[in-house]
Amino acid sequence: MSDEIEAGGESEQAQTESAALGDADDGLPPNIVTIEDCGQAKKKITIEIVRARIDAKFDEIFGELRNNAQVPGFRARHAPRRLLEKRFGKEAGQDVRNGLISESLAAAVEKNKLNILGEPDIKLDEIELPETGNLTFSVEVEVTPEFALPNYKDISVQAPNSQVTPESIAKGTKRILASRGILAPTTEPAGEDDLVVANCKVTGEGIDQTEENIELHIAPTAVHGIPLENLDEKLMGVRTGQTVTLEATVPQNHEDEAWRGKNVTVTLAVKEVKQLEVPELTDELAKEFGFEDVGKFTEYIKRMMEAQLARDRQQYMRDQVCKFLLKETEVPLPEQLAARHTASMLQRRYVELLYRGVPREQIEKNLEMLEAQAGEQAKVDLKVSFILAKIAEAEGISVEEGEVNARIADMANRQDRRPERLRSEMVSQGTLEQVNVQLVEQKTIDKLLEMANITEAQVAKDEKPKKAMTKSKTKTKTPKKTPE
Image (cartoon, rainbow, N blue to C red; front, side):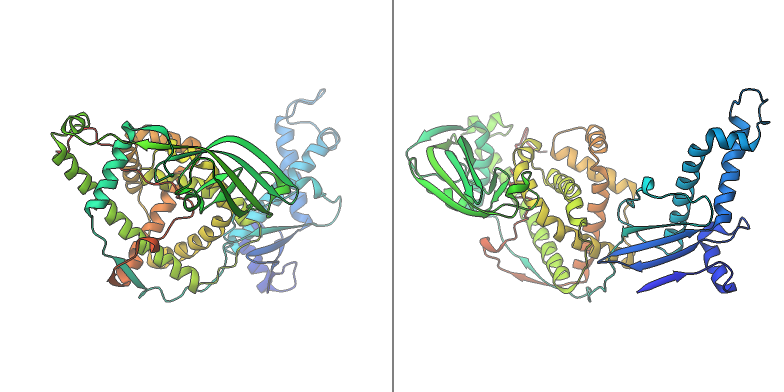
C-alpha cells in the first residue's frame, strides 16, 4: 500500500494536500511526500524538498549571519552576501539541510497522523545538499501497529474462590519469623526456604564454564544469565553430595553473543544444604513485633493473607483477560522493537514488583533472572500494551496526575519510604512514566472485567498464573506495631 502526496503544479488538489503539511502558508511551493509500507508496522517516508524552499532557507540563514556575524572591515549588518557565503558556506549548508529535513519530516508525520515509535534514525551526514535542484531523502520509521480489536465486552473469566486456611496462615507466619531465623548446615533434604551451595558447570556447543560455591535458593533463578525456571523442583529434596542436571536454552539477549540461542546443560554438584531454622512463635516474640500476644499476631497475619488473596484473585482474572486478548488479536510487531523494548520492560516490571511490596534488595538480587527472561517477555508485553492502549482510547480511559501521586504514595508506604524520595528516584531512573502506563492498563483491564462474564471457580494451586518476570516470592510485610 502506498499513499502519495504529489505537488509541483500537477493539480490544484495535489497542491492543496501538500499545503496541509505546514509548508505552503509561506507562499512557497509545497514539498513532495510519499509514504509506503516497508515491513511489519514500518513506513518509508520519502520527501523531496523543492529548490525554492532550499533557497529560502539559505536566505534566512545568511540573513541571521549578516545581523550577528562579526566580519573584519565591515560594520554590523553590512557584510556582503558573497563574503558571508565564502566564510560560512559549509556551516550554513549543514544548518539548511538539517533544518529542512527536521521541519519537513515533522510536517509529514503530523499531516499523515503517523504514530511513530521512538526517534527516526536519520543519518544526516549521508544526505548531501545539492548545489542545484531539489533535495530528496528517505527514512524508515516504526509505527504503532494497525490491527482490529476482538469483541472484548463479554469475556469469560473465572474467579478463584480460595480461602485463608490454617496452613496458609502458618506459612505466612513462617515468612515473617524468617527474619529472625538462621541458615545452618543440615544433612536433611533441601526444603522450601533452604539454601543450596553448589559447584556449577555450564556446557554446550563451544561453552564450558565452571563456578564454585554458588548459593541457590529453592526458587526459579538464573545462572550465568540462563533462566532455570524449574530449578526449585530440581533442588527440592536434594542432599549434600548429590548432583542435579538441568537442560536449558540461552536467551537471545544474553550478554555473550556466542552463547545466544544455544542449548546447554547446567550441572550442579551440591556441596552443602543450609536449612532455615525459624524460631517458635511465643508471646514474647510476638511482643517484639509489636503485638500483645500470639493471638493478636495471628489475627494480623490472617488479615494480611486475606488482603493478599484478594489481590491474587484480581490478578488471576486480569491475567485471563490478557490471555484472551493475546489469543484473539493479531498484532504485527516491528522486528527490532521487542529488542529495544527490553530495558523499558525491565523498568516496568521493577515498578510492578515495588507496588506488590517486594523489597528492592530482593528485586535486585533476582535481577539476573529478570534480565534473562526479559527478551521473550518483551514481545508479549508489547502486544498486550498495544491492545490495551487501543481499548483505552476506544473507552476514553485516562489517568489524572493525582492518581499517579496516589500510586507512588502507596508504593512508598509498602517500602516504608517517603513518597517524595521514591518519586525523585523514579524520575532519575526513568521509571516514572511506567507508573502512568501501568495505571492506564490496569484501569482498562478493570473496565474489561466490569463488562466480563465472571463465574466463581475452584482453582488448583498449580493452575495459578506465574508472571514470567515475578518469580521472586512476595514476602508478607513485617509488622512493626499493632495496627489500630
